[in-house]
Amino acid sequence: MDNFRSFVSVVIAALNEEEGIGPTLMEMQSVLHDSKFIVIDGNSVDKTLEIAKNMGADVLLQEGKGKGNAMSQGLRMYGSKYDFIVFTDADYTYPAEYVPQMIEILEQNPQVGMVIGNRFKSLGVNRSFKNPFYFGNKLLAFAQQVINGVKLADPLSGLRVVRSEALDGLKLKSNGFDIEAELNAIMGRRGYKIVEIPIEYRDRLGEKKLRVRDGWGIMKRIVAEGFAY
Image: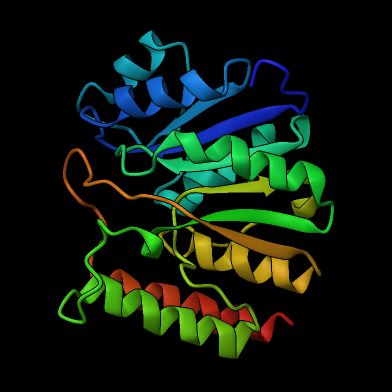
């Protein structure tokens, strides 16, 4: 990555992620040396803010609430300044080693608007239908294909690299965990291709925030984006 030519920023939405934010930033910094690292902090009450600042990240206090709101704030403030925006979670679940490959795909293929890490190629993911998160992801993937015309194996993956110009002039509507579904629909609607690459997926550090009930909000977003076509 020393000869990396594109301008890249890494946007991480964080809320009470003191266990994961340090390892997440350290790993990302090891593969994206000269990139801009931005943590959008949702008013954490633990040491998330302090750790991120100490590791050299730009830290912004979130103006609203929710993951989608934080990601939108990062895009609004930094999106136009960089060629590509890397989104990852603050819980150390997504290995940074895949990001250079994801960026390279975007550099070499102007018709690709976004590259996503597909967790379900990983042997570490519990694919059992007894796992409500896996089952819910598959149902939402089917819904997004039928309603939005976007076919993805892992539409809700939190590791993705977006071509910033693909979002020019756009105000994202999602405030919560529906943000990934909205980004998928936007890329399809704007005529960009989405590429998935297989990645490993690790157990999170810290408390899980996604709940089964959040699936309803994601489904509502998919339906709403269907009417936006």
